[in-house]
Image 1 (cartoon, rainbow, N blue to C red):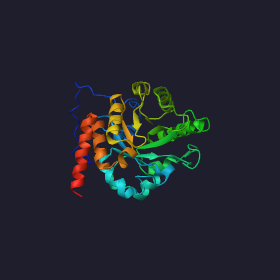
Image 2 (image 1 turned 180 degrees about the vertical axis):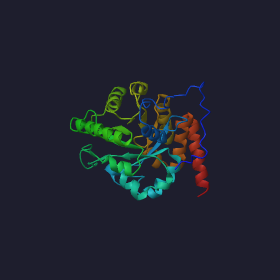
Image 3 (image 1 turned 45 degrees about the vertical axis):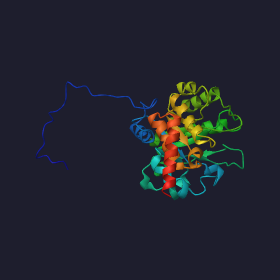
Image 4 (image 1 turned 60 degrees about the vertical axis):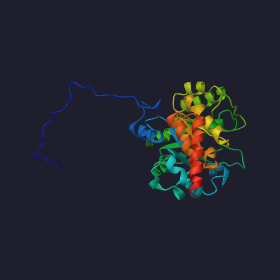
Length: 296
């Protein structure tokens, strides 16, 4: 109970000072609830407005593919250098230490594998995402795929409804498939559809003309790293995407399949948060790799 013996009238009201009502630092997020903004500000660095997301959810459709055979050996040493972790709930519960205090973008749809036709998925129960304290839910959307487009858009729509009830943002992930044309027109279409259906973040692919993709998408875009590239090329990819307006990267194979994953994710972070040019970032990668090799 409040102590009423020393109850003092307030005096410092600052009547002549207007309360500042500042816009949120991420586009398209100013009207979100407090909990949604809190989770978004865990994923994206408020100083740079950007994020380096470490994706290691590949196993949910690919199994123990190269680089994620042993999450404990290959991924956990990289966690400290990431802003956000993207993974499936089984790996999260079994291997990711809660003491890492990293925000989680939870893979929230499943139902098919590389052995079958992809994207015939359902979404997980949002209550499980809440139990895991997820900062976002990631849901695949297969725009242009006649068999799964309607299903996956419905999955996204339903995930957004559920996420709103619990204050959990949703990331729409544009699916890789036979119907995906790697051009700005397709990625602009797919990204805009994700945003129109309520996605708070969109994950898509970089392409020539990416400025148009970013401009027509009213929420933050992060780019997928895609297949493994030589380190300099991957850094150039990240740099071009950031310069075109992307709010970050969600890289997996270009980090954990690198010859020096810890050096690579730090170099990517320098590109994303500090606008370091690819050549300088590549030198940073080489220096960190050499230092790590010398201490083995």
